[in-house]
Image (cartoon, rainbow, N blue to C red):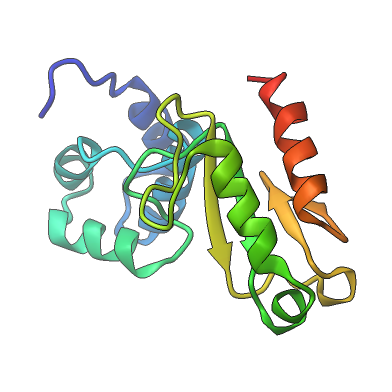
Length: 158
């Protein structure tokens, strides 16, 4: 275990939710809510605290798409590429976001941890396509220019 990692957040979550194996998903959700991802240091620590193998906890974390094992930015931008958004030109929006932020398909988070850009299959707002979300706030009827303006606005909040 890392000596520099502060386990007080994890201990607080365990105090609130308990240490039963049935609480693993909730525990991981709360930890991720705090850090915006699941730090690797938590797996051996949780294993000891919960009496559950690291492999079991890790398998839960990797099974569910909403868990992240890599740090995410303060602003997580999800660009919908479902059918409705795709036919209404979501790809140029994604390309513009990546260009504005210096990101690629493989590099999804800025070095300063300000932004993460991801694609998703559907955001459930097909009538508003093309759509993106920033930290789960929906932005409908996007265009590449609107996306660039949104990035500039969000940079002011970093």
